[in-house]
Amino acid sequence: MRKPVGKIPNPDQLLTPKGQRGVFLLLFLLVQLLYWPSARAGFVTDYTGLLERLDGAPFSDFLNSFGFPALHPVTNFFLYWFHQCFGVQGLGWHLVHTTLHALNAWMVFRLTAKMMGQWKLRNGILAALITALLFLAHPYNVEPVVWRVCFNHLFTTLLILGGLWYALPFFEEKKTALLWRTHGLFAIALLTFETALVLPMLLVIFAMMWPERPPLSGHRDRFRQWLLLLAPQLALLACWAALNRYLFGSVVGHYGPEVHLRFYPPEMAATLTKYFLKYLLFWRHWPHGWKEALMQWLDQPAAGWALFLAGLALLTLLLFSLRKIPTRLRLPLAALLAFFAVLLPVSNLYVSWLLYGENDRYGYLASFFFSLALVASLAQWRWRLWQKVLLLATILSFFAAWQQVQLWKHNAAVQQKVLHSWKWAQAPEVYVLAYPENYRGTPMFRDFSGKDEALVMSLRYLAGINQTGRIYEVAQFNLATPEDGVTVERKAGNVFKVRFRQWGNWWWRRGIGTWNYETPQYRFTVDGNGSIVELLKPAPGAVVVWWDGEAWQALE
Image 1 (cartoon, rainbow, N blue to C red):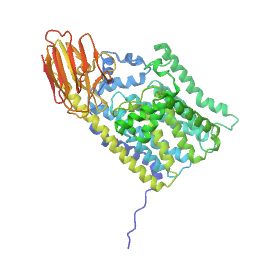
Image 2 (image 1 turned 120 degrees about the horizontal axis):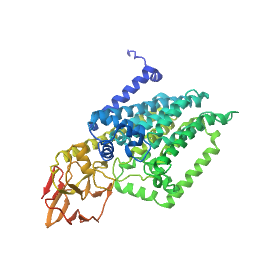
Image 3 (image 1 turned 30 degrees about the horizontal axis):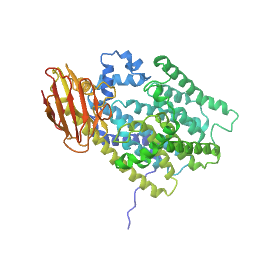
Image 4 (image 1 turned 60 degrees about the vertical axis):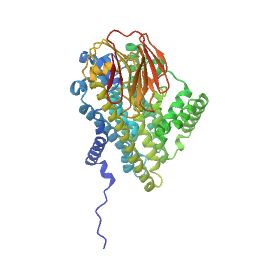
């Protein structure tokens, strides 16, 4: 005789206060399990630039972002205190970033469950949990969780999700009591990071796509309703732009108007398509030739214009047929529109595709809306089949994210070895013929400043080594394995032949692959599987060093 089985848990229990605490605890434990190997990683590149700005600066300078040309006082308020409390010890930073990531995943769960319920879609609770897990374990979300200067991406996402959450009662029943929280969180987000600019667009999208009929239309007071929703947002945007104009001479800081205000429709359409295919097809993990062919096709002006016109036509069709869209399709469509809206501010920036990890942070918030669109679509058809497929996808995401975390772990190990084996702090001049720039795309000693100071800054702020003489960073290279390095042979006088010890590497300089170049101090020439370096006027006592994969080697 079959034994009676216990009572099957009701998924609705996850929406009770106790259930929601349990969901957060689960997400927090999973993120610790996934990210613990990278707890000591992420102190790279822009982080040393942050420490340079903080060096000797009073706390009150957070108001001007410690000299950074952007309106980020909230970000810099927290970064100042994190540095005071944790220094360059990884555990504190790790707990801050992973806790924020778990909170964002928890908000993803709450928002998805609430929206699935409002749209009267089936299997909402389990779909919400799967969406949260996909967001938590997405391999493209590893960069902002591990890189210690990406606090702004994590915190701004939390503020935006919170702003959307407090707008839901307004969408549901026209209750305005909590809208002030949405506007307050938007104000804080604007002073945290530029991603905040997407919140008004998200509010419009979800208001227009709300089930049954758009909640802000068909009413005598619809103008007043729109005013309550958007007027404070637009006023805050105007104040933000005016403050930028006053402080930086343009309505937007950070990369400046020549980057952020460059609007070329085919290029932006191609970039949005690259992001869409990145999340749909995971092209970052494709063979190099496949990725290159896809990027080259999308970068053609004809392809860009075709994508732009097709997108414009689809958007126009959607607006004219808004009232006819079935309820079950409204949430997936709203989420898909939100995905593109969130990426719109970065659609005029380049998409990194060559290696793993770089610039994945720009899609952090967008990954939620993509997962929501996917899960909300599949939850309506043959759910028993699709939930198994989605659970398998979640497991595969954990595996892919784990691989990304391992890259950062090895990155940190090599970085520490490079820094703590440095022996030439007192040398009058040091010529670094070759040393690591990145490990399989995760930045290690990357320098976009054009000053070639990545190594000297890292020595000073991460290893406590003050270099008295000048360091000339002749060239860098990407690591395919943690043991990659070069050999050096003196050809004649001050001419050196540098060779990679293995295949799979290339020369890098100032954040990008490089070719031949010359400075007043040295001449660098690519030569087969290596390079020829000629020192033009080394000082007496100058030292020539290079990284051989295990340790620094030197010639005097």
